[in-house]
Image 1 (spheres, helix red, strand yellow):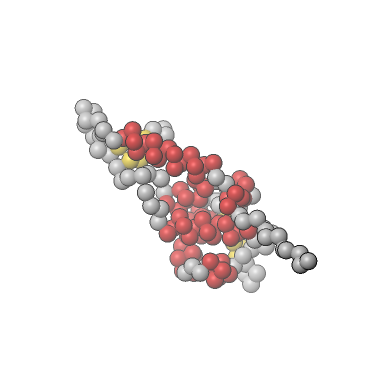
Image 2: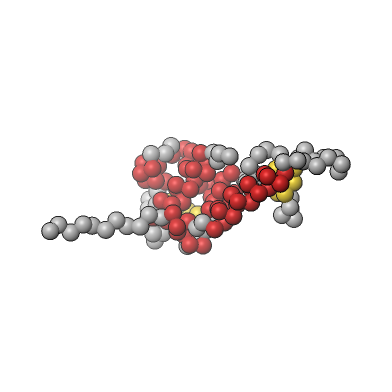
Length: 149
């Protein structure tokens, strides 16, 4: 399974916001330059992240984006789902409203998808990993300055 650039770039934006500490809004142009990403695409991504209440924005000369919550309180599952939608390892697998995993090929009650168990487990592993990984874990620790002898 491959996530799209929406997930990749969106996670990079979130990590950069977390790395900056969250006290002052960060202009998206700074993030685009620092990460070498296209500004227009990032504008689209932060709109999705705002709708999911993961980032907030401030307008004006000193405006930009901030995390809506502490980095330790944001899971990668929230971020990826805000950007990608429901996580599914293959097209026919989706989540039902009750949390059950459904296969689009099981339209007839007599037909049972022979690979549903595999893809359900794969999806479960991916979702569990994303749920157990917080944004704070992805923020690089500050480098220690070496002292010259």
